[in-house]
Length: 406
Image 1 (cartoon, rainbow, N blue to C red):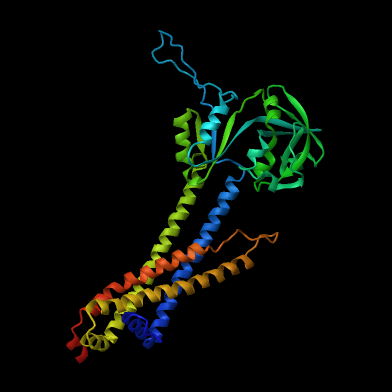
Image 2 (image 1 turned 90 degrees about the horizontal axis):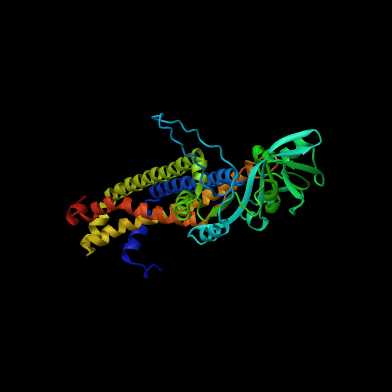
């Protein structure tokens, strides 16, 4: 039945079958190692994705603004070192923002570019008065950055020149509901009464009590930026490249481009530390699995020395004997990775079932990616082969006569 197999494979399978207990132990060890790597990788990836989703849900990856205004000192000849106070920054429109938008949109790695008008305002309703961050948006493009329609918990996703969207916390503070009127006033004296068409929940109390969204032209009128845009909000295809792309934008169009990496530096450091920890864990487990496979195969060489001597006496070359043990290492790694991936998948399923939020939803989304299992199989097989090199070379160097005599 196995006549079609190469000699080395037949011998490797027979050696593994004769030492069933050793083979079982080393496969179990390899399976546990792979299961730990796959399970922890999925947990850390899911946790990282959850942190990013919650932290960056209400903001773009890159915010582009006009360059800061700088005060020019008028030097008095009597003063050797005149003191210049930093100028207060006004709300300015980006000069030629339409042309800049097109240039940025055509840059590699950029996904979405949309203009916004953002500035301070007061939300008034009856005796209630709250300071808010007013943001005027182009609904069609902005929802590709912040998924506002998916976060509406009351009312509908509708935004016209007389509509406003507010967060759940602000609605509570103002005692407002969908359909109620709310007055927005800005520091320059402009004011407008709008209808609350939707109440959103972006998962952050601060955002829910501070952010207010209106149509772009409504914010332009309120903030006295007719036809202008105070920001260009950008999302990129790879959020880890946001800072590099921001620097390229700054060099290309000469505007201030702040990425989420710069404005959330502590978050970036924490996410980087998670990635490094995940990599270190994989390396440590791989080394442990390799040492386990190598130790068992070394013992196998000692136990099978007589059989190795007989194979050499029957004409098997040193390379063939070496391949027998390399194949054993590869088989142990491959089988261990298959069982380990299955164990990890079962644990991930149990994690989702047992650990839930108070509302019954999963603590955070976990996905068992087949790609991760494939990579685990490849790495475990290569680890098995690498671990088998030393025992295989030792077996190949055995003298047939000495080996047969024991």
